Image 1 (cartoon, one colour):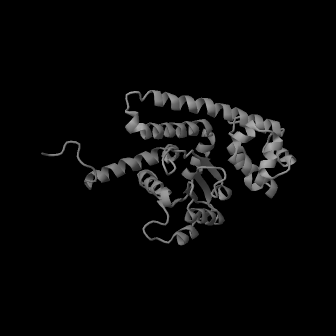
Image 2 (image 1 turned 90 degrees about the vertical axis):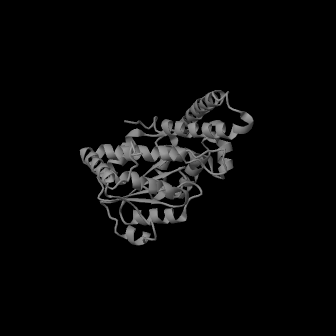
Image 3 (image 1 turned 120 degrees about the horizontal axis):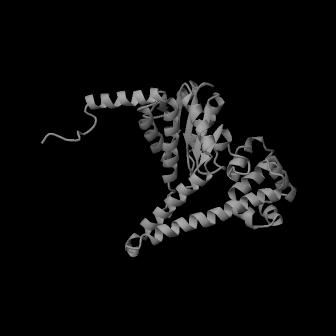
Length: 298
């Protein structure tokens, strides 16, 4: 079981956001947005930059389960050192390993691949596997699971709908092909769950749908890119990925890894029932000729 000292600072604060007063919530958002500054700057500097009184950060530290602000700062320092060493080394290894690549033509490929490695490494370093499995258990026991996402996340929920459909018949994409998203959400209740995905720039449709699903009493699980994401405040559980990229648009590589892992956890929880459905779907797909034959007739 993960202890408070092992839990990433991002998770410790995001799990308590809804319990904080407006002032403490402002301080929490500042820490979440600027963990490296917390690690490297004095409390006076941080308070001035955040336009808050220094004692506000001390109260925040205690509300988040730390004995003092210094303990919170030490946690940020530990994570800062770990990120600086681990990520830089992995990126350097990848870049140096591409010695046979024509740098003049393929520099973007190397930098993009390095950023993807960093994103996945950050996911591995920060994820609380016990929390992920607990969220998967809740999805596995739900009557229905609504998949909600728009803009760039639309492709993720469509993919999740296709993959989960092989093993989990109660998972469905909400709001697709002109169907009424509000009417679908209206049918959700406490026995149901909503898996909502959005990354900056956040889709207004997804944020509003997440709020509605929570209001209906459904268990809301969000996959997003920051503890300051608007999805977090109306979620029962949230998981985060890095979207850093040398491209003009955020990388979604780590999000795909997280989503596939989550589905795998749910399938494992459903056990033999899921395995038997997958086998049946494969047989029916063969009957319908959905798959190109391994040895096509000449």
